[in-house]
Image 1 (cartoon, rainbow, N blue to C red):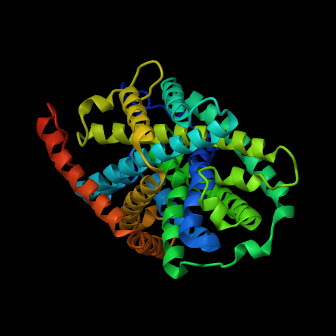
Image 2: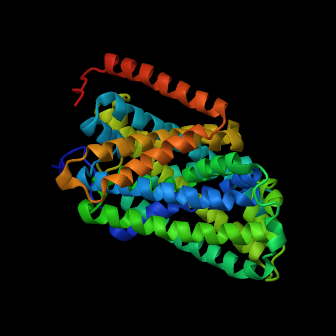
Length: 428
């Protein structure tokens, strides 16, 4: 049986998120860094064949999304796979999932901030990209402190602007499509396609934000699966359309060499003003992603602190807005640090590896679900796990080693946090 929370109790979170809000948060997390930034990185790895990698990543994400949806519907608490790992496997698997989620999404937050800075500085050259990135992180950290309902509405508004921008990009760019820009199609072969799929899988994974907010979703048994599926279908269709138009317009080399690849593609469109529309849409999209990243990361910190896998102060929830304020502030601080000192290529790769570990554990949890709680066939979770393993090992060895080191450091930190905790909670 799924456990329930008591939203009226002190220190608890309120179920303020509707289906529209949940879809908006999911789309806001997906449609941003992936389509505006990681597209260029993937094009540099695989050439025009990154489109195939995009399709593979979409299939992998679908399997993982379905596993996450049935888990979140059964256990609608904050923490996502961290919570499922604890309940269905053991505390170490649960901690590993939560720690790798934090590593991935904090790195992703840095990536998004850098992407926002790159696009914003194209629109306003007088403001350095780094200043814009830091300013956005500060603004959105503050917005999150005023409650999930207000943050969710702000996010829905941002997503609407982003969707209209990308639809405009596709329609304006169709006439610029040139088949010769797709040759040579796969200059780095199957390995390049596999690596691009791993990178782009990271770009799809915003639907996880819905699961980590399970404790704040209204009617989670119905809302979470529906929101995850709607989010992913819309994202796959949009990603494929935009990627095909972009690479067909200017070629993969031009996309790979530019930190704002869609603006580079839009320069050659016959319709005037698309360059500026894309820049504005990208900036708002990065806002949406940063907003949802801060929401999801702070809720994971809240869930892990509740079990003393992180310091207890991160469990603090404000009385007025019912948000984990210390987790929000810490998340904002880390993202600002990464935006100042991080580099795009390595941060994207690291985020991709750590999130694949997270979803691998999610699929194992889905396989352990009781029969009466399963919403989808067993083969969905098996296929999702297979994809996670295959994509993870396709990444550069240095990235894999770095990710494993992060995991080991996390295990050591967990032991320290639980040892010094004044009132440690039981393992289960």
